[in-house]
Amino acid sequence: MATTATILHADLDAFYASVEQLLDPSLRGRPIAVGGGVVLAASYEAKAFGVRSGMPGRQARELCPQLIFVSGHFKHYQRLGDAAIRVIGDFTPLVERISIDEAFADVAGCTHLFGAPAEIAAAIRQRVRTELGLPISVGVARTKHLAKIASQVAKPDGLVVVDPDTELEFLHELTVELMWGVGPVTKARLAEIGVLTIGQLAKTPGWSLERLLGPATGEKLAALAWNRDPRQLKPHRRARSAGAQSAIGRKPADEQIIRPALLHLADRIAARLRAKSRPGRTVTVRVRFADLNSVTRSVTLGAPISATVILAELAEELVRAVLADHPDEKVISLLAISVSHLEENWDLELELPLGLEDEARRPGSRLGMARWTADCAVDKIRDRFGWDAIGYGAATLGVSRSVPDEFRKLAEKDL
DNA sequence: TCTGGGGTCCTAGGACCC
DNA sequence: TCTGGGGTCCTAGGACCC
Figure (cartoon, rainbow, N blue to C red):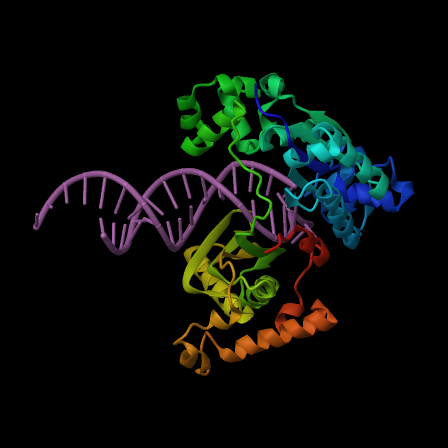
């Protein structure tokens, strides 16, 4: 007899759109999209017409002429998302939050207090509905993978419990794209060899999958198809990287365009790194050209950084190297910076390592003590007066904000 | 003429060390 | 001196997730 199903996966339904329908009752039951130029989220009524997040607004309107666009109430998203996760936390401390609207939980240790996992799941759904006014779907199973699939099957506004004795019956009749890690490319590759369902995947020889998808992916999918999911619940995952990007339309690859854009991105990232004392050693830039192909370039430093201007300068050097390698590309459509190899608990005093103080004080030095103190001053002013109270001249001007900064914040992981 | 934004993990080759 | 193997780190690209 298998162990009990105690893993929950809870997922708020069409979260941003549901919040808008909660705030404005006249929107309930109608197709709505959050956003304007680009769809940030769509209600189920809009999804029925094929409207998807990330879709250009114009295309969405073509698919659904009666679509209602609403600008987002971003503060409410954060508040209600946090509140929903707290409801889960009232039952068990073992909660792994995946994003603003989604979390795993293990209720093995609290069934004696609150009843069977299925009852706990029902109670969570009931409380989120009555206390917050939002629909949330929950899957209950023995593993994370199966719980996640169960919640997807439960949507919208449902509950699915997978009995440990009938796991494979449940799993094998579903299509492969419901599996974690199967996207459009993998789905298409599997379709080439006639594999459409998870059951067919399970019966496919391992060597065949590994040849088709590579050793790691092949082995992983084979394991998941037989419901062997080794992943443990990890309540306190720390972020491994922090980044920012900006789609800039179609702009010439000139310094006047690139420098302010990179400074703005570096400013956003570096401020986050400093706030959590997590400087990073690797800087990666991505340049997307007019044809939407993109190229990355990275450098790993001997010591971690979190100063805005240093990050911006390194990023600019990397972008220059990319452009030098692609002399025919005159137009760029996106710039991105990411910082990884983040330090765990970095004492800010150590950012200028012992022995480098002299170098730091040298005028024009990259380590620049003056720059460091400037960042600190900016951070303090922003703490008191808000982000836009101060900034790096060029970065505050002329940077197109196709997506509101509040929306960006929602997607940021806690460092 | 606006195809978003923030992340994770895997792969494959090369450098380098033992 | 030559050959080989294993481990680690770095880099660039890609698939995928929300």
